[in-house]
Length: 307
Length: 285
Image (cartoon, rainbow over all chains, first blue to last red; front, side):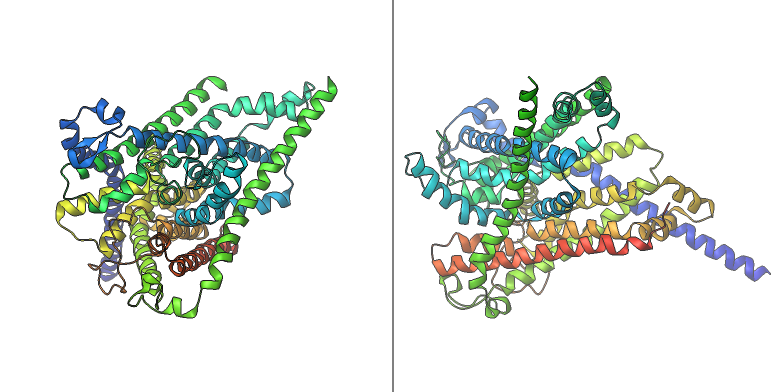
């Protein structure tokens, strides 16, 4: 009798201990996630402080002079390249995603959905280096052999446009998944009300659904842009990497992530160079942060007022 | 007037169809063009040998170092990420189920971390390594990639666990099981297909990412035998070979790309199979 009680108690203590220990580990993991962004941000800030103390922020962002050897660090050319590539990628991917999302959620038959679902998934899973290989194999020759001559220009193909096209395809699955989710979550009553008032299907989509989905669409584009802004290897492989302000679509550029990737290994001997590259990483981090907050904010705001 | 309406709809439907087609064609084009270029250069020798002298000038050898290195690195990172990500995802959906606000903040942070470019993780990892005087190594690369895939894995697992009805949690707790037991004996089993999909998704991310290991894992012609040695990886191997001016080396880059694509497609098919096959073992509500 006594023995049995002991056994039961021991088992109970064992189970509770297990629970406690496990709860502790779970809390540690939780803390890690809360702390990780702080560590990332403060670490990068700490490293770039050296640069920020000696050169004012406005000069860093708006000076065109990039001469690490003589201590001149102007990020303007790289920022402009990044903005060009990113905006252009969104310009290509945005309409395609929006139209496809509407098609898949409103018009498409089941077999199309069944086919497109894996397509989007696989597209999202392809590594960026493969996109880069594809860019070199298909996009770059296409631009230099067909598109360039067609427009009467002789170009190498390694250009802002090539980077943007590759990036566009890369962010399509990302944006598309969000958009599909948004269109699926629009209450059907809205469309029913619209149709019962005599609007056609397309009118309902155009005037009711898109209007309702607009904040979501904007934030999806925002998130897609922030993704494109930080994409490294694929862009690096096709964009040409020449330190100059791109004057046209067919000119090479040099976006920020490519700058980091190309130079970070060998910068230790030049003073402040690693600080400068860390600053570039910090810019990427801050941009992602801002875009995430902004798109969250847009969605929350719209949910308050638009219901 | 009526005509205009009809034509507008027709016009846009054509556009929609076209953009859907563009996406499907892009995928086919990507896979086909890489396979077309890479398959002729792919050989048994390439898969089973490490680079020999003059490999990067077009001589003999293979990319076994990169294949094994990649598998080591991403398997290690996935295992590490599971040991942090799975408890966290369970914690969010079992212990914190009544603290919606906290969980939402956590989800936001995870989304944020997911959005952070992998090059930032790489650069940060490298800076930390310099600070502590650590050399490029398999271990450093693995940890960097782990940090990079944790948010992906947790968010994917969270999406799955979120769908478990509260009733299951309540009935498990009311039968006297502890929360840890509920987590692993009930929730884990109930969601196993979805969780394994999340794991495979993260594995795919880990094996395909190049920017985060560019400075942290290094590159070598040998297969690493300990955690402190540098390791080659497939994405970087493709990248380096492709930047060579020699045609044979470039062709090998395409062949390596084929290997990487096949691994990715395999993982993706496997995860699709998991999520459909083990669906039957679920308790249905």
